[in-house]
Image (cartoon, rainbow, N blue to C red; front, side, top):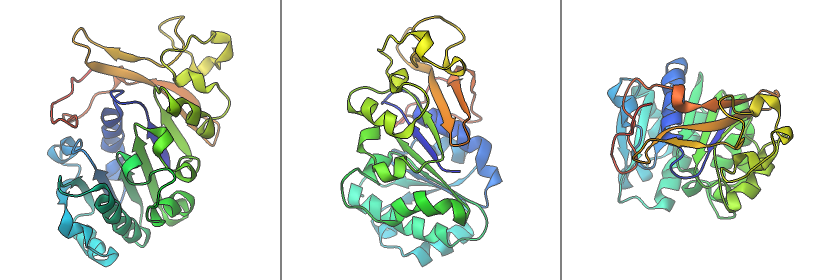
Amino acid sequence: MHLLTAAQSGWGKGYFTQSLCERNLPEYDTAVILDYSDEYRGLVEAGYAKWHIGGPIERGWSASNWSTFLDANPRVVIARHDSLSASGWQDLAASVAKSIRSREGTVLFVVDEAHFVIPQSEGFPTVLKELATTGRGEGVSYVVISQRLSEVEKTVTTQMQSRLLGGFDGDDISRVSDVVDGYPAELHNPQSDLSPGRVPDELLPNDRDRPVSVQRHTNDADKTIGSEWIYSDNSGDRRRIDTRGIDLDAPHYSPEGATLEIP
């Protein structure tokens, strides 16, 4: 299953994604998390994966090199080295993608901050787009994560079989309608004041009457303690998810390296 996970900055994408990885990593024969901001060290601390830095040397690795590496490290978090540019990170991601397409068994491929790897209307390695259209038949589950939906290649976002979308603003709201169907895109605008009658019953909040749009929940220090998301997939499953009820086995780290508060 391919999954698009997107929401504006501060919504808790990394926390939610880590919870998904904790639940699903053990079920895959191979798992690679491309960690742009070094957020997923908690998965390593809890024993779900090993940790490796992707830097200038790894940028030059071929798909064959990565295959050898993944034989020895079948579940790995690859953190981007600070010296690696966005184009260098793209090159590394492309080589990893070529490698996992030829691996036997099931593969989980997670690309964090995907707007740097598969940007809209810019040149990037085609294998990263091809995974969205052909990866399902190759045993690959492709998870694309971004805070800027409008800046991720549209061909990729519209090919995702399932979606976890939080709150957006600006240009990103206009892109929501490209990837969802059957409910108003404004449900993802935390500032909107939609009438409950415009929203399917299963997507309404169960703890209040208004606002019905997704909300980010904070404590007195304005730290995120949970956020609301809308899940939908191509089978017709649609539901609202509140991450205040989700706990992690290990700490999650923000891009600045600070531990996020566990709800």
